[in-house]
Length: 290
Image (cartoon, rainbow, N blue to C red; front, side, top):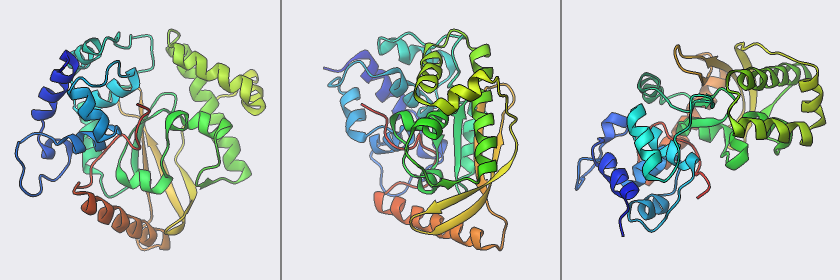
């Protein structure tokens, strides 16, 4: 039986055109709105789960899933709150780390399809990632979607750091969590994250107790990619005015070996998306737990 949540989800999916969300309409379409597969790609949720939600065969979606769907559907603040309530959830309050991606930030990302781009919140939770970013950095699931947890407690990733780069990264991450804890004292998930890091990582606990504070600065990163080889890329972190988000952009100097390898990666991504019938766009990255 269709639920209010499922009906609302389907109605808002139908009102969006592929072009609105940075996708190509491509081929014959029975309806003007997004396909379930497209909403799944944009939100990082499996198409099967989107189908079950719309048909009322899956209940009680997590807040993380509802937030991802709200971003993919380009919902306004009131619409986002309504979607949370139809899911039986209380919308995140003002004292919590904001995860709302503003329309202006979303439009910016829709146009940066040729470079690896992602959006995180103030505590480095991955909110959105385009296919180039996911292909560059690999899939990040569950707890690995938080960059601080991933660095201090997670498995090794593709980024290779020098000792000096590790020191700067750790100062930046610990400082970001400390600042966010001051700005968002009511955020229970943030408190749990900090407690887990202090318990599980002696290094994090040491830096936390020392009151370390970092500064956002442009940097270069070395990425060991399994298909195109080593890339040394500029990594710029942009902070949009009026929202506590971070836009992470990777670029290479034109004419360099790294630019060539980044172009090779773009060709691989484009071919995979063509085989799937979906054009390049900005999605939430790999699937959320369902």
